[in-house]
Image 1 (cartoon, rainbow, N blue to C red):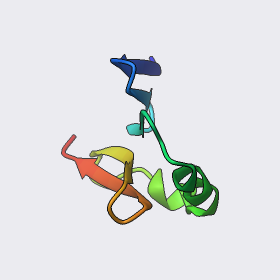
Image 2 (image 1 turned 180 degrees about the vertical axis):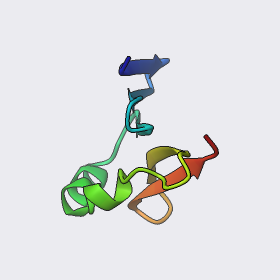
Image 3 (image 1 turned 60 degrees about the horizontal axis):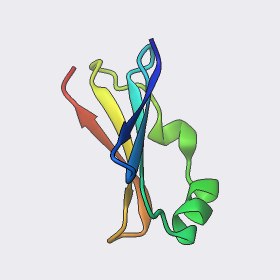
Length: 73
């Protein structure tokens, strides 16, 4: 089942279990993160891992970009 989890009042995690993709939205997300999201290659960020790992998309405040991490499945 797909799910949304709230981590305190600071973060939201949206999980799409069938695709193995999670989208982590931190609290206090700056406006430039929203702007960057409109320019991001969402298909590449959310692409399934060929080795069935779990994909996590998250905001990297240091580089000011949305990033993709893959955890072993």
